Amino acid sequence: METKYWYLQNHTLFDQLSQQEIAELNIISCFKTANKSEYVYLGGRDLTRLYILKKGRVKIAFQSESGEEVVMEILKDGDIFGAVGLEVQPNHHQEYAQALTDVALCSFTIPDFVSVMQKNPELAIRYSKKLGEKVNTVQGKFANIIFKDSRERIVNFFRLNALHEGNQQADGSYLLDMYLTHQDIAHFTAVSRQTVTTIINQLIVQQLIVYVGRRKVVIPNLNKLG
Image 1 (cartoon, rainbow, N blue to C red):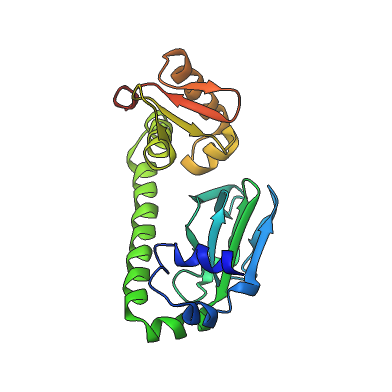
Image 2: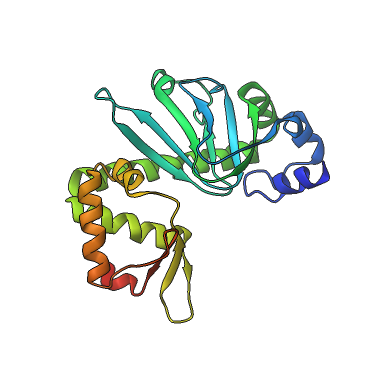
């Protein structure tokens, strides 16, 4: 239990809360794990809750009218997802969250969270900022899809991954874990899988990216990439 409190009290959103306030979120009984490929929620079920990803990677997606998967976000440690607007929206019924790796997360109900926010204005301010960051991320993704061609979308995918999740090495290169398949990248960038594979192969030939096995990518020079 102390470990679970420690995790929340070291999260940027909750580190100003007391143990009593964290207890009021009834969060300790809501820690769970999911294996790779399992659904955290599916088709609107359990979307009356907020989720915090403690460890691992999760994708947020929905099915388009044509039956294609559209990936909205790839989440990392510490990210918040679920009913982030503090109410269930109509489009949430098509939304699902799927584990890309083995994950650990915790969750709490909207009423519990709102109750604690009402007593703690600082939490409300921090949450508003988090929500704003998520909106900016989604808007940036759709701007990338609308205004860029296929190659630029793929290049931007690797560039943003390097900046936000990559580890910069002593020689200036970036090393990043690659949790997504070519099909996943296609769903995320609204490009066909065949096009993704073609462009990635071109980037490899041009030595702009280097695959190390199947799960790691090195970007030797981020400026040359894009």
